[in-house]
Length: 75
Image 1 (cartoon, rainbow, N blue to C red):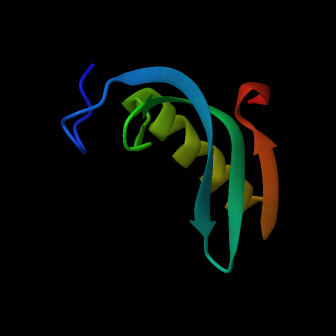
Image 2 (image 1 turned 90 degrees about the horizontal axis):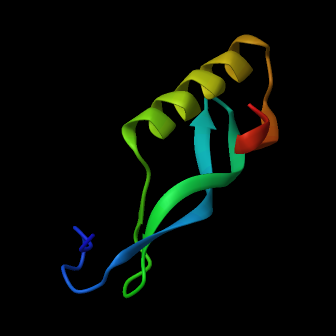
């Protein structure tokens, strides 16, 4: 698909690392599936992936985690 950010490049399925702020800390997710523009590098995650990241970040906050690095596929 054509990149929504630059309008020039094509996106390809890949993986990325995403950091979400969690109050005083942060949660780092590795191996997150994303469509990445081959021209500008912009990363796009599907809605279902974004919702899963939010759910897992909220669970980490509820458990008192201040900083965690998680593999997306392990969830």
